[in-house]
Length: 311
View 1 (tube, rainbow, N blue to C red):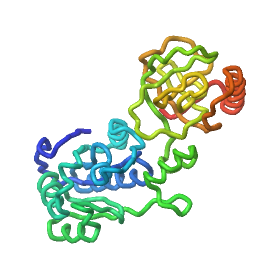
View 2: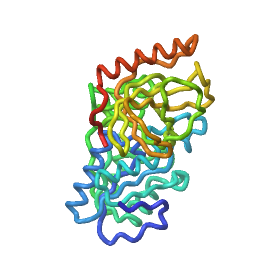
View 3: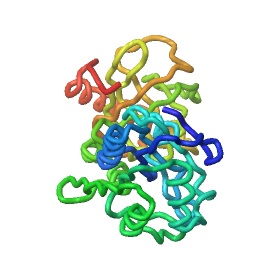
């Protein structure tokens, strides 16, 4: 997949392309329908499938006081889109195109730059300055300028539309099963193991350096850990470690069962299976150790010492 970060670097497209536009935060099952539609259309017209997306979240540009966070980093999002077989991705700075009218965006980006032959979007798609454009306008221009607009049906779970906002709420609540259903895969975080503060504790943990904006609810989790040496069961804590460390920045600490070796600097993937409890400040180190031992016993009994997980 070719990735371009500004309009000027995109080469002229001699053949018609199939385009889909959006933030694609999390690349959930609804997003996958858009990607599949673009790929199918590209095959039909003999051209490339193209995703137009944005670095960061557009709401941060439109609403200065927003606290919205991305489910995954931009790097992870691009990697996930690539895995679905898209030919080309245009990663734009939203500020560079936010003042374009809907008509200008269609003419300058979709037609002139990308030579769009078909465009796949959901019924609630909005674009152009102030979100002035929608599907009706896109279809009108399509008739005038020679591209087809495919309206992709909304994907629902339990009668509710799958959305990145809904996934963020489920993550905050620790409802990982709901997150899995909407993503269509297990939720995981990948990072490099870094040195911690080396506070004395009975359970050595791998601390991850993260570039994820939005992470699951604080507390203790049952996890699978994927390392180059294999797949392991583990217990993870997300939070500030108030009993022993009282960190100022949230940490993801993972105790990997039955693992020995130095993995500092290595990349691991942590797959979240179940949230056991919220983070708590215990009265003593001994009380904390007793509870952690209970957590580990529960995880071992339910999930075993090793197994398989999504790679």
